[in-house]
Image (cartoon, rainbow, N blue to C red; front, side, top):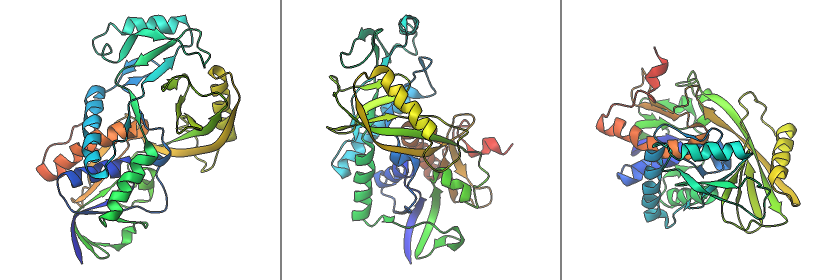
Length: 343
């Protein structure tokens, strides 16, 4: 029997960032990463302090951006790579009214740090009204992030590549492991979890394309009109993603694929080839807050879920919130506490 402080179930952003907290604080753990890959693995990795449809910010945006920057530097210390890419988001304006609204909002105290009042025009794209730069934005190299951390975990025998079997838990033991705490970071997989299956997470299906552009971008930016466009490598670009809270089918939706193709054509006037279509189910919550906390009966069983479309920022920031709650007895923020659903 091997003694560990924690078992982590899952391999998405919640699991990886919580694992980082344990590595940072020298806690022993084992992660169960099954064959079913999380929606995190096909996410865009966008780091964005704004809601670009309305030019507004969101709860704890600045704090989360700063914490992510710090955390990525910490992760670099043991993986040897910083996965944060400092390529700014540029919003392509639909019309003159949007430009005027952008300028008005640059004067607001909460938005001034994020909205650049200087506009740019991009030769490669259709952008007659120009683009606005989102300051303190960027993205994470998603594949490198997961591959790099997973490689570190494998090298240090911290991961088991098989599905977790709930019925094998006996008190504080699971198979050959004795644990103090177990943290379930399963995304939509929580619906099969007998301890937390009633948690109100809503699957929000998102599609994205991997495309090969006939004419490369002149600028190393992430562009946003209806969806995001950014380079994956020298040949291929990411374009997506959709938000489909009513779509439940576990396969590619041709209608959403065509929606993305037409969306790209609106501002990219050159030929392109669709190389891949991917989708995933984001675990979202009605109040748009993550869900953290422990089981009412099994006090050392914890949940870390509901990260939604901001999986990177929520996963990074609230990993410390959960760690401090478990290890130091810090009260969880009421906005993210699991108990808000138990009234």
